[in-house]
Amino acid sequence: MFHTASDSIDLIFADPPFNLSKIYPSKINDQLMDRDYLSWCETWLKDCIRILKPGGSLFLWNLPKWNTYLSQFLNQYLTFRH
Image (spheres, rainbow, N blue to C red):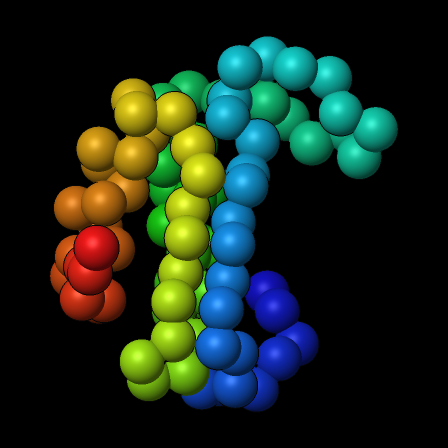
């Protein structure tokens, strides 16, 4: 997905579409079934994890509805810190 070397980025701030049926200039489909939206998020998050340096930070801006699920997913790969 990203053409970036693994373990090469210190900080990632992700602000994806929230799946609220908005219309974007990019024509991205923002009206997916829940499982399809979460699967899409997992795909790009896995790539974020791949390019993130050890000790790097990932900030995810999304709705609580989605972040409750996505935090469970991310906890499989990253260490949560306040």
